[in-house]
Length: 338
Ligand SMILES: NC(=O)c1ccc[n+]([C@@H]2O[C@H](COP(=O)([O-])OP(=O)(O)OC[C@H]3O[C@@H](n4cnc5c(N)ncnc54)[C@H](OP(=O)(O)O)[C@@H]3O)[C@@H](O)[C@H]2O)c1
Image 1: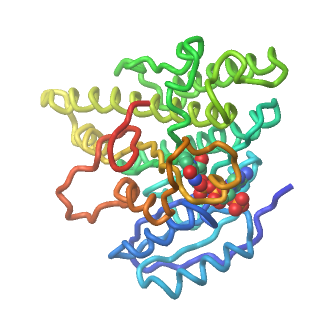
Image 2 (image 1 turned 90 degrees about the vertical axis):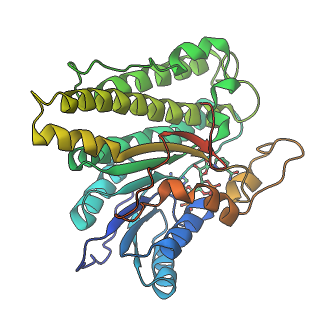
């Protein structure tokens, strides 16, 4: 089993923004670390999650010579292992505290449909990101600020799914009433598990082929995994909106509102959840998988792709008056349909 080797802890003298990026050692993730390190004007820590210790050390070294403000720290992360995901969370919290931004970037695209491919894609692209979100988001909510950015794909859009799948991929607009609100994990997890079961049951009925009745086109396992990630994100956004409107309503009622409630309402404004389609990008994934590209389209460089969504990841300076972009699903800097 994958065990986390020891990596030197880091001493910090001043407050700093903490970014966590998974799949940080190549492709879009490595470029995101590079651009984040270059863009930050005050001290930041970038926790680079990845599987190869040697490459992790090399990334740390490279970034040390490139940026004055950014400290890049490699922390081992194998997303197929729930225990490793839990160890990663413990390590981040112990050494750096609650992250300001979690970027779920790591991903896997397997071509031919089978039970094993479905299991692997869903584990890496959806289950593990959801575990990281459930570990960090409640702490971000308690602190009153934080951001989750899920690198998803246009392949997870509802348009790729047969109408039978829409019942499980559609999120009820209002997740919970303000009175019964019990935390993001309850309803969101239930919706997610229900949809996950639905796709796995269908695949089992068709000899492992989830595309038989539910998914249009190529890479059906990848599409299912990204649709589940989108579902989880969208449900969280609705849950957050429900929580936000109830807090704002309470805070506006001056007869009953306490300073704590006012602070809580303001804090919810500082929580953002984004999904991003990075476009068709020149990485190992795009080059390894047949037919990932639509006919006639060309590949973006990692640098170009990341520059189009960097704003969603970067924490603005404390003095910034510009409101963050609204929560949602983005491609090329614009909101798109789920
Ligand atoms: N490239 C595109 O055209 C495109 C389009 C839409 C969406 N995306 C999404 O963009 C994200 C980044 O993909 P990319 O294009 O940069 O692909 P990539 O070059 O293949 O990189 C994938 C990354 O995910 C990591 N990863 C895979 N399995 C993992 C596991 N079990 N545990 C931990 N890390 C794991 C890899 O780590 P190792 O180095 O250890 O293997 C690598 O860092 C993915 O979520 C992908 O779905 C890409």
